Image (cartoon, rainbow, N blue to C red):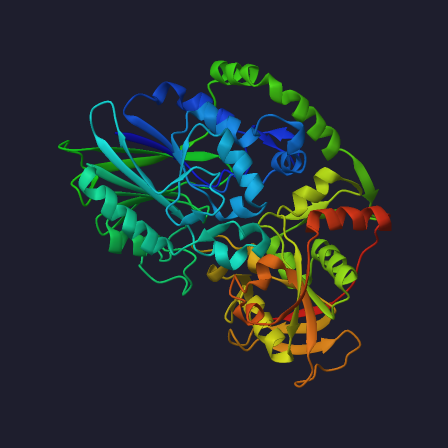
Length: 521
């Protein structure tokens, strides 16, 4: 048997980088053209979730879906011949109706053991047993990380319940194992351990793939969420894989019994498994056929491009793409804009924001495309009541971003933010605050200055307000000190819309200085 597996495709249907407008080898239509001749009666095509969020195409579609009688993401997966899929945490970002619009357009079956659908319109299956052409019975179940309950806005989960993934998967495995020759788990979550050393990487339950492998003993574990390239990982008797994000690579897993292969790993039920990560290219003839058969989507694409290229304002001076270490050491002009938007909206004492993994900048003349390129998530804003001690703990977490070599005086980015997943987005920039890090000091004791902008020391006894994204407000990323603080206000507006409005109202936008920050090393 063979499995073709994608995950975390994040809205990438066409081979387009929307920030630059240039073509790239990615997207579901490219994958569809590449795998068409590989699919037979003994092949399953499976996806691990996080599909609805990530590109301006899906942002535009979800804001205008009443105009169209198709779902673009479903069209991409249907073109691939997808058989089964599960949901990822970002698929919940737009609420029940957006998920229903997606699932009703999909030809594949949705499998998610730990999502309870109170309205009953999503067609979720807890498990399925698929009999291949050669008679092999494949038992399949799936689950999404339980951290959806931590991250997601309450309004988006009113008709859904996310239960414990381990318990849900255990129950479904008991149902399928005696009826199956081989068992497969689709898990939208990643590996909580370093796959080379076994070192525990996090104490949270965001990622539990290693626990699933050790405790439940599936033959094959298809993981996602971390955006890691994991061509193979044998944990106990379970064979795991994970493709990177944005539909740039996919996994091909092959399993057989009785074949002698030096490269194969043997699973709990005696299956010899091998796998590879395949880089997306294209069969141009088939790809053009797919485009022709989806010509009905061109009106949407034309409207999308018009919307993306709509001028919204300008800067006094262009902001060149900011390299991650340089920005973290000396401050980010892009982050200052985001923080100013949050401060003006909420009137909070302080603001913190983070940036995407890629170096970001802004042209002098700004379009919608530019804003969606630098703020890629549909985050909303929360105001937390915090103390000086809370802010100190959060800043110490930020200061952990740096690795300092006392011998060479070199500063680099700590592996804590790079492994097993690159997490530049968990370094926060603050506004309304005068703060300094001394990188020569030990981690956990690096914050040496913490004042208001006028130089007034923060009081140990006073309560302050901090505005941040709904994502950071959960405490995720190592900021439990923020997560435990009382939420005193929430705002429904999404940050990309607020930034667009800010640029329109304030053009030409000059350099914004809303913090005093210094790194000593």
